[in-house]
Image (tube, rainbow, N blue to C red; front, side):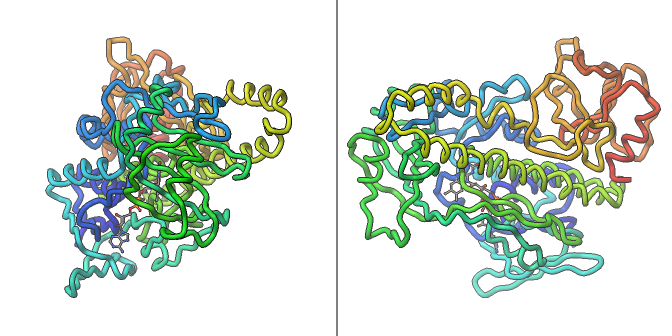
Length: 508
Ligand SMILES: Cc1cc2nc3c(=O)[nH]c(=O)nc-3n(C[C@H](O)[C@H](O)[C@H](O)COP(=O)(O)OP(=O)(O)OC[C@H]3O[C@@H](n4cnc5c(N)ncnc54)[C@H](O)[C@@H]3O)c2cc1C
């Protein structure tokens, strides 16, 4: 009997297995693909995701696996009409929030990230990685959960105390556990093209330090066409809406690339695939002993690169909670707090960012058209350019204020909308704050809770607490209690609150 069964060894399942394996838990993770598919998918890894990579012991390996030379900028831009039309502004400048995180952001194809995470599993003895096996059934009883797995006619049953479906947007685990999902369908068939073109690389050298390029076109009513770099100097991906019934044979994909770019270039098509533009979210992230995480819980178009990063945060959030309950210091409500924290954060990501991008861009292209009134268009485009560079970055600061396991927050409910600040706020991610001795808070975080306090405090013995006898300079509190996932559980001046905040943060 394993502690945890994981269905799906994509990025999120792998991250969760590492989180649990590092905490010493026995885990079986089952993945049907022998190798990660060579589709670039989630490429932008945020600063927060790179904090996870550091916690999972693979930060350097991830940076070494990147396909773009070190030192080249990772920014994006938005253009109007076509990529080379002359109308463009910086978009999604992730570097603008770097000071609030302990690690720089990164960019590499998802298959390269998965290869690094797979290799990390080899070093974790308590994790069994069953690759080439498919999960065909998932079920649970009062005291355990089960997965039936199959490979080439052979079947096995695996048992675990808990089961997590990290098996992507068509999740078998979600369906088998009776979890429903809510879907906002945009009825937009989309194409993904991966292509090789050194000539296109030469053309985009006019945009140094940019790696992804959105194009707004009046005909597309706010939906984007977008290019992204995959292999430096060589290959790219491209997404765009296509007419219904488009198939590989019936459509001029090179012509579409040329129209979107606004210029001709030689191109070899490496891959053409189709997907439907929809935003879906599971109505519950937990059903008894079964949980879902990553795309199994939420999926959406890759507008803003929230997908894989949101999934990694699910894994980090759920991992320490499962561990706490398995180690008997986590209480009855801790596992419910996974849904209570992560569900509203994605609901807000979908509504306040992804869907808002589409709504805003639609309103813009409907109102302004250089072919109708160039002067009015240029004034409006200039206005957009000013706010465009930080849109979706500065205001995106997921927090758990109002969570049942956070003490003393000022917000009513968790959300993706927030403000970055260099301070320790209950429910918020702890930024790297100076400890005044040349070190920052992030250098001192333990694997359990971390208590920053100048006074020695007697903490209840059942909780894993690393005590640091100094307080961050900008904390604005005399005591700061940080959770195993790097979020602030409580911050305040009254030391008598510490045991209460610890009990609450542990779901007891
Ligand atoms: C074309 C495309 C482009 C994208 N671009 C971006 C982007 O630019 N930025 C971004 O952040 N996100 C992007 N995404 C989204 C991102 O790829 C996902 O959010 C991410 O892959 C989610 O990871 P996951 O582990 O939850 O799911 P998945 O990556 O889907 O992994 C699920 C895994 O489970 C396995 N599995 C499923 N069912 C079973 C079963 N029954 N038995 C065994 N194994 C099973 C699958 O083989 C797979 O390996 C893109 C997605 C697509 C499709």
